[in-house]
Length: 267
Image (cartoon, rainbow, N blue to C red; front, side):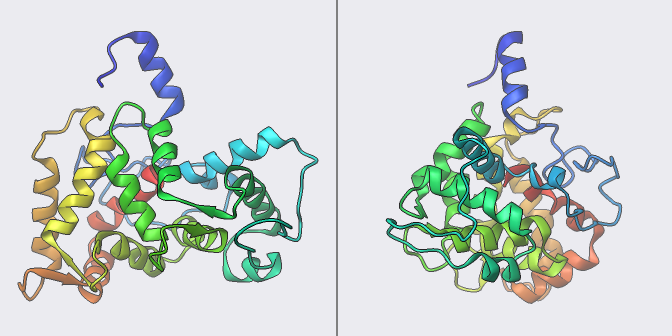
């Protein structure tokens, strides 16, 4: 539903991320980063700061849940006596991720508050993104994102998988981020990205927020972006993109690397 009143516009501005068309490549020629660097400039790994951490919708959801509990509620050893899934120890998760012990404690407190069973399901993801992007339809994107986290196709995400994915997206190396992005685009997980798969992901992002960007984007913009991407990535013209083609092309093309920061806006 389009926002029609000044009051609703203010409300939307407070509850959603900045929607200026910059989260997708070539939408308006500018990068979405706070530094204001141009899209063609070199992509940089985000700094390990609380500010960058709090850009993430999933982290905001967790931290908001934590604040409801009060500052005195803490399980430093990441243990629950009555849950369906028992998480790994805090020391092990700290070694496997780029999060500090304190950050992991905060993430876990919120996670267990929202998901007492120790597992998060797809409906929860849909609820999260519908709250952060109320002016669009986040259902399909939330479905794709959930599947990217749900590596074993169990229909639920453990806390370990949750924080491992967040660690890569927020603080991973360039190659790690690109591998995660490839996994998102590879919807059927056969090791290749087809034009149809990439179009499905792009369209889901536009459905969630792209149609309400300023300046406005055209309905055929997702298709145009996919066509440009495939011309660069599908080097042997076999109709699919392998992970090697994906990573090599992205690392050599500064415009594509800049566009990869879309994950900071819609994760």
